[in-house]
Picture (cartoon, rainbow, N blue to C red):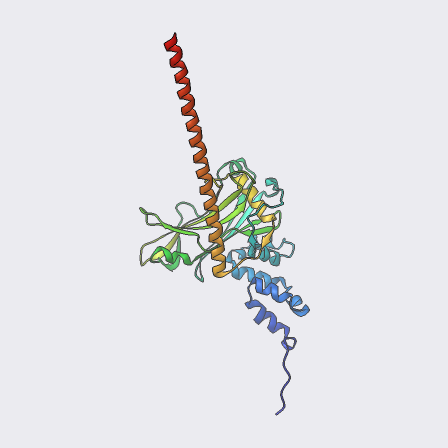
Length: 327
């Protein structure tokens, strides 16, 4: 029996490759395939393909407004996916921030529990008002009285909340750049002793002003969940804040400057799975360690100042007393 010759990928019809193969790939895999051959490069240049990957990865990008903004990026969805899938480097960046260059920030947020989508929202935030720039920076996706009901049963035990996955992509429509500020998996889970609500925290470390308390800044992403055991899980808060190494909340202007540095700076390859989780927690622990070192140094400095004040007061009293006795 004669052996048939091997079939190459070139023999597969292009419409089959485009509709049944490339559409099943996630962003990084699709980017790798594009470099394999000129045929794959041509096939993977289809904007609809990249837009589909963005929508399946981050449902919030299905918003017509967000889609229009993404279309203005240098390579549209491909550029957006590259920005949102790379790791931010928390090292000093050669970027000159200018708050006036970013009059608007767009947040595209998606919350999953395992593979199930719980929450998807888009938030526009103006950054030019004095109220934004001078007030403590905070973004809230839900009003205080809002509650998002989910199809997920309220988890038993705090460890089960580790299955939550958060994506918080910040978009600068003027600069046509984006970045994902979430650690994807939680860095801490705590239950409030009185209300019973569970606060799930995600975090990303950003580079700030060298030599200052904001040399490193921590971007906190907080998801607060509630509900009764055996009932449905409710999402009651989804918010973002930024604090420096002294635990002080940065105002809107300083937070925007940190974001501009991160958005315009160098990016690195983003790990996935357990490696990504461990890397995020490592950076979080390093930040908290430096924060504690700074606090202890401040306490020691204040202690030395107190001792000097006591010594000065004692000397002053002794001089006054001796002068009074001699007189």
